Length: 196
Image (cartoon, rainbow, N blue to C red; front, side, top):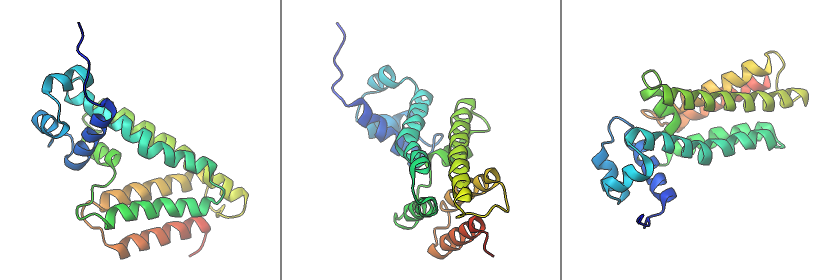
């Protein structure tokens, strides 16, 4: 007779995501997972598979909970300039408020593993591609409405904003100065608006 699980699988997956996000994949041991998730090693393997499988599930959860809502917001925002500014503001808040900034779990994972782990590379590429597409469509709409410059194609501007956001999130790992972030946001939005 199968044993009934006595733990919330989603809650445990969220805890795993937080741990991998804080420590990274390689620095997180199976014992770290057992200690922090509060379940037995056998329950962890029976429910989520090995450490790598659990990590991939955590990345997918991060996408659903953190990335997809941002992408949806880009497709539905009435004021696209304000929405792009709010994305940067959220990233800045993540950087300057905690004592130890964690950055973006997806960007951290891509930097750590994408060159050696094809599964992580596939997930990271899909997130980047979908985010770029949402930015492209939003900026195209902004250009059509006369909000953003047409000096550059919407695709190029979308890639510029995406690269700025990713660079923002890497830099916050070691330098979370508020002035630096304000400078980056100001320049990025000035480029979008076509101001020098």
